[in-house]
Amino acid sequence: MDYKKYRGETLFKRWFLNNRFSIVLLNILLFFLIIWVFNKISFVLNPAWVFFSAILPPLLLALIQYYIMNPVVDWFEKKFRVPRVLTIIVLFLFVVIAMIWIINILVPIAQHQINSLVKNWPHIWNDAVNATQNALRDPRLHSVKGSIQGMIDDTQKTLFKSGQNTVNSTLGNISSAVSIITMIVMTLLTAPFILFFMLKDGHQLRPYITKFAPETWQQSFSKLLYDINYAVASYIRGQITVAFWVGVMFTIGYIIIGLPYGLALAILAGFMNLIPYFGTPLALIPVIVISIMTSGSMLVKVLIVFAIEQTIETRILSPLVMGNKMQMHPVTTILLLIGASSVWGLWGVIFGIPIYAVLKIIVSRVYNYYRRESDIFSNEDAASLTTGDADESKK
Image 1 (cartoon, rainbow, N blue to C red):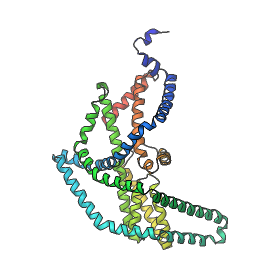
Image 2 (cartoon, one colour; image 1 turned 45 degrees about the vertical axis):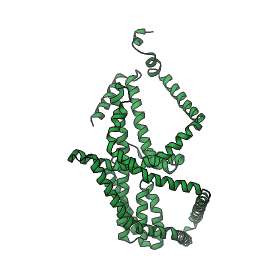
Image 3 (cartoon, helix red, strand yellow; image 1 turned 135 degrees about the vertical axis):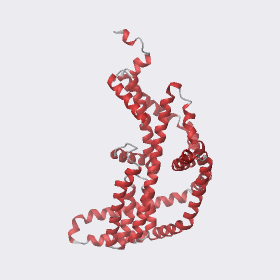
Image 4 (cartoon, rainbow, N blue to C red; image 1 turned 180 degrees about the vertical axis):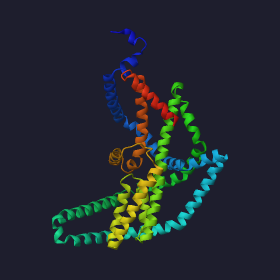
């Protein structure tokens, strides 16, 4: 054995970094050990989860608003040297005035349409079912009549069962409803204070956290925090901006064609657009049902509005606002949404992508560090990796 080769290496580097079998084995064992430990001490983590779930809603609301307002505060500070506190106060006043205008002008109209839509939806659905059944009486459609009728019956049973379960759970959990109302009130009261101090002192957070890292790692750790912040900020700003303009485009389109409940359906489309790929098609379902019940020409108009909106969104709006900042393949995004929704429900759909982006950045950084330090990879690979990291840091 050539002992000179290993003379300058530590045991950790020799048996862990430079031994592929030990790396795979230890990581598998570590993964299952972590799962086993968390399973055994889950009762210890319950108080921590209660505390975390209490502070999470106002923190998330403040964080979302922070990523929207912070570019404005930074721009006024750098461009005109306006104190951050003054810009924050002006922004808060602007938000309050905008909220008052929305509450007085738009909310009554939207509320009236939403209440009317909820009240008349059973009749609209029954009319749609009857129209479909009448269409299926055509002898040319006998071959598919059974399957379509089965789909309609299954849909009705599913909707009825889910609605019944929702009513039963609501009636059986009055205390939970009270706690939800309390949580909403506390969130609305505390989020502005959190937001104020995040806007005022948020730019000092990354240097402060970096100080806790070892001195040799501080530069890389600071870059890691920057990349995580950039990815989350890009996603939140992009999704909210696209969702807002999608709602605006559908509002204009539905008003032009005279679609009943147009404003309520456009607001629904804007909110549903926060769900990538699936949101807008899901929001289109009640629109198609209502347009069918209105007239055949209304269905054609709705499809034209949808086609124009999708063209503007996919060809102009999304590339301009979002670009490819998340660097995620569409298949990865779809699979992630399906898996996250099955495990965490609506929260998984909303936050699955940014959490995945953060984990991807952390894992890639750890992997790059391992490739640089390990002798398993060739010198050319390590050199190209170092060059790639240097190029990224220059961007």
